[in-house]
Amino acid sequence: MRGFGKRRKGSAILLSVLLLLIAVAVIAGTFWWVRHHLPARIADTAYEVDGIILFVLSVAAIFLLLSHLYLALTLLRFRSNPKAAFVGVTRRSWFPVLAIVALLLAFDLMFDHESNKVWGKVFFRIPSDAFVVEITGEQFAWSIRYPGKDGKLGRSDVRLISDDNPLGLDKNDPASKDDIVLPAGQGELHLPLNRPVLFLIRSKDTLHSFFIPFARLKMDAVPGMTTRLWFVPTKPGRYEFTCAELCGLGHYRMRGDLVVEPMEKVQEWLRQQPTFGETVP
Image 1 (cartoon, one colour):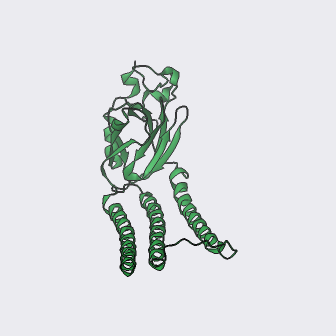
Image 2 (cartoon, helix red, strand yellow):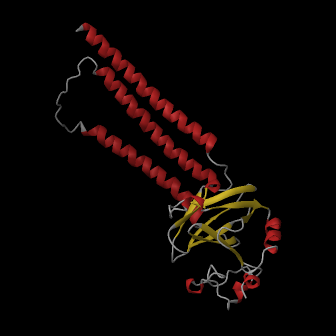
């Protein structure tokens, strides 16, 4: 019996140590990966989004560590008597449960407060001088449209869509004639550096999701409506945008190249692109 008791004590200590090591390893590994493997940040709000991610991970890490610590202490405390014992419910026994619920609610309110501040910056307060780009998703590519010299996007209608007019632009609308249309899967998305960019996001068929990992921003493309998203690109370079909504068998190839450069270069590139009036008779 003494030998069995020693083995039980040794097993309890070993399991307790393993529980704590697993918790520490998972937490350390997660934060190491977040620090070294998240994409570069090219948006003014990306740091705040990362802050929310780190806040959620920190709360999860605290509860993971506390739960493993509780399990380890339980193993050590009751290692000499593994028998189950019934303990009746009393008013005092509810205090730990209520304390945990109150703590969870406090963390939830803190998270809501911080996330709502970032949400307001990302989806509202759109600057009046924003550089406008229309993004249209379809299986399995993105179409891009820029306003022309008049600074206005022309009228479009799904009933006008054809092989030579994939976005259904109204040929009779003067504002459409100077629009620059890059058909699905053709061309790059050029954005000006340090200037607000407003995306008007649409879909021709099913649900898609316009996602720029480097900006930490994503917005659904919903058939029949136009959704909005804006940010300020703060880092020049070549990046990637993609679809974050499973939209069919070709979802994996629904991506495109994004170039952030000074406004002068964006305007020079736009002048080299044919307008809608030049490509559609």
